[in-house]
Length: 182
Image 1 (spheres, rainbow, N blue to C red):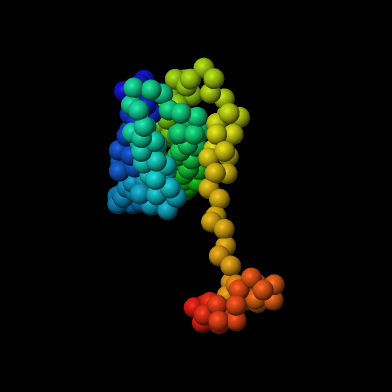
Image 2: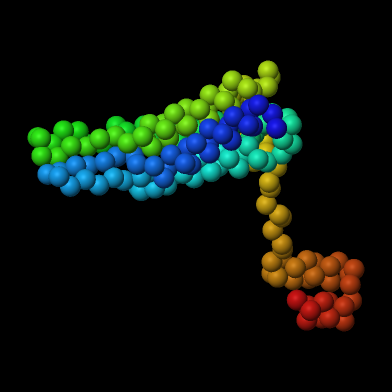
């Protein structure tokens, strides 16, 4: 397994584990409760970490990620990092002495794992990988999927048959036979 794939996978696995650890704990008058990362926007971070793991496992394991998968890995890591940063900044503070909110180890670990996915994908990239070339590879991949041509409608087919009959290329009997098949 290439260094890039290995370290992206390790960082993303750490991120998945961090989702199950406490992200915050709230204490009020002797009662306390903790919440893990699998709540609210935390699900998106979990999916982003899972996407980074999947990307690192697809393709030839002894080679670095190709341009498309490299951009996807960077995107997954960035999404996970930004979501955990948002969760960190969104935590309430203070409480006037009656309520205290403490940040859990899971949130810090998830934040570090998101940054780790991005850093490992970037540090161990191929020499010719740039953000522009990665986006161009994604665009070219998306441009190859063209929809199938629309099938002609029955009205169009009847008009073609009438033209063929008017030009004398088919007989009245052939015209009626083809018309009944439509």
